Image 1: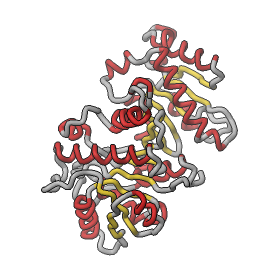
Image 2: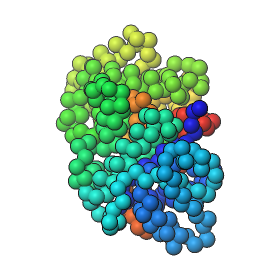
Image 3: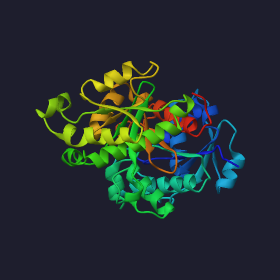
Image 4: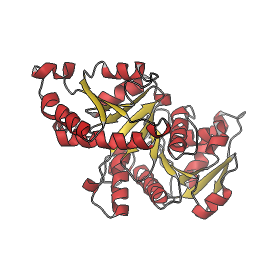
Length: 358
């Protein structure tokens, strides 16, 4: 029987992750009633106490530790309960708020791995991840720069294939815009080197497959994908760089030969505005824009409002979403952080697993 339970990793315990999880349960009890947190009981009790102190009039959830997924399923479905599975070693001393710490990074990583395993083994319908700090992750001995790469490694190991055989991409989405990144957490110089015909074609394919299974499956039409150029004015016919001519156009031609609806490359300073303006047309200008590097794609989505943004990992054999923000160490421990992006990530995960309408 297909489970509706979502796994939610608590994020870096020194950041705002535990607090916004508690707030999400308080503000959206119906949405969160089929969610189980993978974290540490002491950390979540601290977050709950902190929120109670700063919001005495609010109805806060009851923390309910469960020993395994079977119990989580049995106890799920009741609003007002924050289900918790212990997914990391209990620390002797809780990590201090707002500081980069090896302990916090290790705890966060253990919870991510536990969540990935739960989704891959079918205990959870999807994985939602609260924010982590990449420096803390590294200090904790984790050899992956972020969620995306760590989850890719977990999924590849589960499938018995190499990481190279399970390419993934990062998508940032809000109600107005979807952007998929051709490269993720690499330097800008390395990102430019990754604008090759093979890499761009692979990004197009991964994006098309995701859209075909989700957005466009409900609309009974092919996905439409727009490509951003790398250079100013999309290279201006080679005057400002040849990546469009040597890599992006050949990738687009190969994708069209496969029957995919791909257009571009468009000047990167206007394509995101075109996508946003044409999102409500039928057919739309595009269903997603492929950006050639990390910040090119993230800046327009985040400018439209971090509180609505959701990060989705494409190419994994599991559904994974996360808020479109970081650990906010400057807010950690204050109970002032907003949970809207986490709520949006949970809604997106539910929608992707067919458990919630558009």
